[in-house]
Image (cartoon, rainbow, N blue to C red; front, side, top):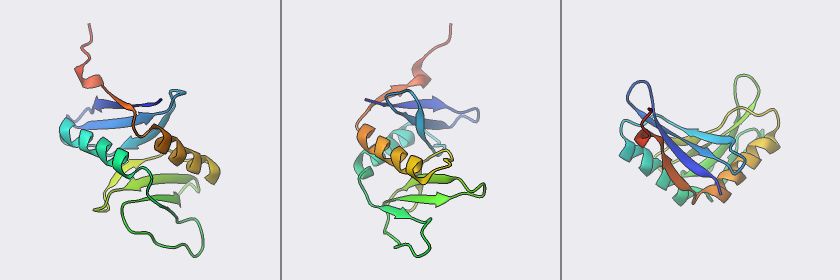
Amino acid sequence: MGEYIIKKTSNDGFVFNIVANNKEIVGTSQTYKSKAAAKIGIESIKKNANVEIEDQTLQKYEEKKNPKWEIYLDKANEYRFRLKAINGEIIIASQGYTAKSSAKNGIDSIRRNADSDIIDETLIIDP
């Protein structure tokens, strides 16, 4: 099973990554102002992991209601995905992929790992 890893940002915010079994980062959250808000983001992924996918790479795609996954092409012509909450805010987004199938595999990985444990790296003290 994968895991969610919460980290503190340089500007005193909080961000989390969802990491698959192979230790690859599948998605990264927005920056949250508090750790509690980041944990709410994680709970939103757990709740909404199996919502529909809106494939914006198709010429005539069917627009889905939030919450939803979106697959899209970025400015570098790479495939990316993001999960939007019911209010339209982006919960988690991916890196760019050269193949759409890789973006779909990323969504599938998050769906499989949605119930993963949370690792809070903000509690780790460096020696």
